[in-house]
Image 1 (cartoon, each protein chain N blue to C red):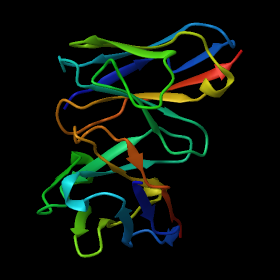
Image 2 (image 1 turned 180 degrees about the vertical axis):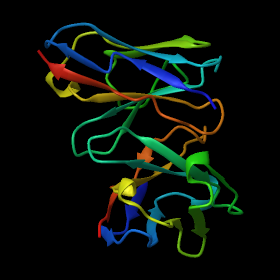
Image 3 (image 1 turned 45 degrees about the vertical axis):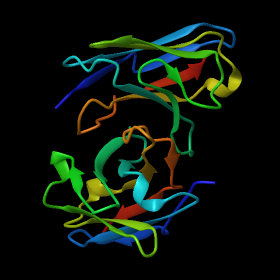
Length: 107
Length: 119
């Protein structure tokens, strides 16, 4: 099974900051990697698929990059509504086990 | 529009089983895979498995093998997830989530069903 190591587990940042979250896969997964955002009490929301493709309706301040084993999610200028938990998910093969999550908090 | 409507909250005793439903509408039911994901209180997302509503083939996460059964009913556009031999660690919100053109892209989610396991 593919294991995902997500870092950091938590992060404090301010509105307007540029933020990067990283996921590393235990083996190469090409670009088979999705990113989700989850706000407290809400269902997860798909942000990025295939490592770098922006899901319809997602603001352009979100971007993804990477391939193989190293992936990043970047928020170019944090907005108040971006404070949430972010998860990566490999989609190369089952099981599609999520990363442990990164909680993004207001500094 | 795509809608996934799940059944209501459940309270079960340890050792019992629970069956959660997810009724789909707004698209061709048999054209997209359905996943089940759970989230224990204050914890992360845990992928449980996937079902192809067309034919009913399934793949389960190893952790749940022998305890989980996912089924589909094309006549009602509903998928089901049954989890048996419940223990307190199974207390969680259970979500169904629909795949997209790429089956693993979870673009649509049900509202979640809280299952509480308590004696």
